[in-house]
Image (cartoon, rainbow, N blue to C red; front, side):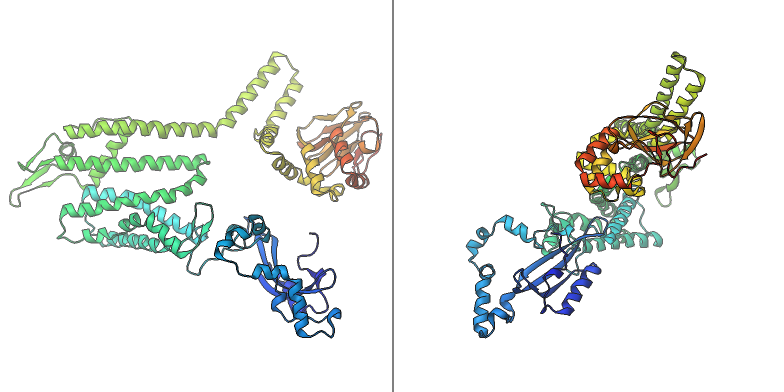
Length: 624
């Protein structure tokens, strides 16, 4: 297991030099390749292998290891003449090769179909690590036909976002066109909608060539299975959504009812949101994204209700039976209020005038917004029975929508300011404590300064609480990351194994110090080893500053060489805001006792900048 993957230790005098060079280049260039190579067993017996090399990449597309598979193909190669077979005939050498490779011959022998399922155990298949056993995402690249698109590739992801945006465009324009009966005589809008239809049609073609995830979590790339899956799921809905209804509506001789029906069928495009909206789940953890999404949903519902509200008024404003105007309709009242009343054209026999469509839409949206937000100014009000029934239904829907959306908005803002509220609550408690026990002013200011500075560095996050949630292995990995500066800067940790570093990292603690804080008092027991990660400290002996400690310095005691606890011979005080990584004496000795090899290296390579056990003992410090 600790040999080179190139199998250079199995090369011999007959191994082809060009093949050796190709194998080396394959590993150096992180490529996948296959070779026929002659290797030698431990007893110097030559064997031909079919060698396959495949780089394995992680989620960051970085090669982390190579998968090498070997298949014995000695039976299919020219028998090799060695010392033990000199003078043998070619047939004799081939016979010996067949005898030595009987197990391979048995695997290559075809079996009956009824026996295939029971001959090989699942364990044997897994140990072979064939490409059909490994998950496809673990290999360098899934083997897909040239015309098949991976559903997680960058192009497909971008395309899905384009479809999502166009779906929202359809959700806005379709109800408007249906309610206001706007035939797309405008060439610009007709071209735009036709382009949208073409894009939806192209999406259908792409879906027939896009992989999907099967029920077992595997990536399905078989074209036949892809086609069958799409035909059974989304094909009908996608087909109805991409038909050119706008082009049909553009013709003047199309009946108004048929035109509205064709336009209404475009609403089925909204069902496509179910496939693409799942991508929004990645952003639901962000308060600002959820807030924008809720506002968009609220505006979209208000837009739909505004279109329905206008359709009701447009249906009731003119009585088609008596050809008279209904003066109690909200459209008639609106026309009078803005100075554009309806008038009857006797020559044409139709009613004309009234507000423009833009004004009607804005007024409808204004009414639905005031109703959904429970404001209701009343200047636009329902008067007919149908309008009142719709208003009642809209108020019921609006109350639920208002409570849901704005309740979530309140929760989002509470979450956004939760840390700030905890911070102010903690400050108030500390102030009350200091006032209650009449703590001296100087000490009170130090306490408040420490709390403010600590909060600004830690953002109120309880590191111990977070680490307690994680499992043991994950907690060790996080601790190694948090203490990486200590491990990288000090040569004493360079020879530590991964297990040793993880054991040390779990025992390390991080403390923040404000200016003026005393880390050690003279005469205090020195029970920890301190590593300075940032900031400056001063060492004071007999009221004199004898040393300045900074980033990369270490102070404490050499526990591993002493049997008794030391008394600090000096004061160590912070001059600036400092980050210290400390490890207690008991924890360090426990790790050193277990990892004896590391203990010897640690004892030789760790140099204390300031040994608090001895007076005047400093190294690399700036003596004053």
